[in-house]
Length: 74
Image (tube, rainbow, N blue to C red; front, side):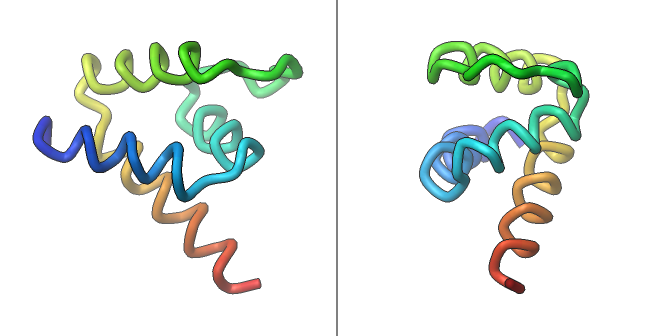
């Protein structure tokens, strides 16, 4: 799954809005659900690197798929 990480990064930053990215990270428990501060690109990247290091890329991919499918249904 490590080979998919660059593609997941691209999808995360290109295909998701700021709100969707925040929702994905909250859904994965990578940041607290009561997070209110804006996340910088570098902070989001550190969280994504942590998900990769924790072998959670499948979860990340599923969450991205879920959010993008939900927005295309509207």
